[in-house]
Image 1 (cartoon, rainbow, N blue to C red):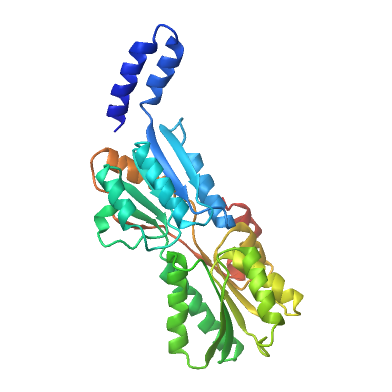
Image 2 (spheres, rainbow, N blue to C red):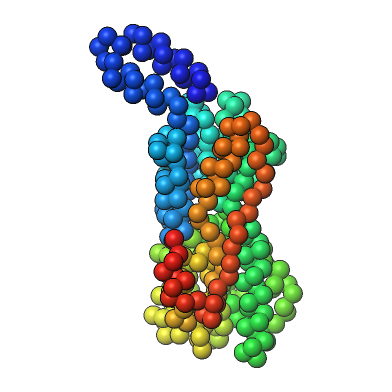
Length: 330
C-alpha cells in the first residue's frame, strides 16, 4: 500500500517540483511512514485515557508511523464509519478497540478485501471468520472476574458472614470486559446458594452514570436492609458507587460495604491502600507496545500470535505501598 502511495506521489512531485521543491521532498519522506488508523471507544474512564495515551506515545512519526485517530464517543456506528474512512484513506493497518463484540463482520470483510489487517485491542470482536482480524491483544476478563470471586469467597469466610448480599454494577453491555466479568459473578451466584444478587445496574463503565443509578436504587423502595458487597466492573464505576453509598450513609471498605473493582488505576490503588476499596483486579491499558510488535511482525510477512493476553496482578491493602502506587504509569 505504501508503495502504491509512493508511485502516485512521485507523479505529483514531477508536476510540482518547479514551484515547490521543499514541499515535494517533505512529502516523499512521509511515504516511508506506516499509516495506522485507530478507532478508540472514547474517553469514558481513566483506563481508556491511559490506553489512548499509550497509543499516541508509540505511533509517532519519530517511530516511523503516521497516526490517524478517531474517538467514537461510545457509539459503534461511529467506529464502523471510522473504519470505512480508514479503508478509503488506504491506511496500512487498522487498530480497533471494539465497543461491543457483535456487528463487525461486514466492515471487517471490507478491510480484508482492501488488504488492510485489523488489530483488535482490549476487547474482542465476535466474527464468524477469525481470519477477518490479524490479532487480539488485551486482558483475560473472565480470569479477572474469577480472581474477584475468589476474593469474595475468602471475604465471606473471614468475616463469618457466609451469606452475602451483593449489588452488581455492569459495564458497557456486550463488551468483552462486561461479558467476562459478569460471567464470573454469574457462575459464583450459581455455586453459592446463600449469595444474593440484589440488583444488576448498568454503569456503562462511567463514574457519572454509576453514581446516578446507584443513588436511584439506594433511595428507592428496593433499597437493601443489609448490603455486604458491591461488584463494580471498573474503577470509575467504583468511584461513582462509593460516592452514592457514602451519601446514603454507608461506610465503604474495611468494616463496611466491601468494594470490588477492576482496572487498578493509580486512583483506585490509592483507595485500596487507604481501605475504602477492598480488592482491585488489574487491567493493564498499556497495550501499544504489543500492538506495534504485531505490526512489525506483519511488516515482515510473518504471522503474529493470534491471541495475546497481557500480564496482570490483583491488589489488596496489604499488597500496596506508596512507592508501588507512585511508580504506576497510569
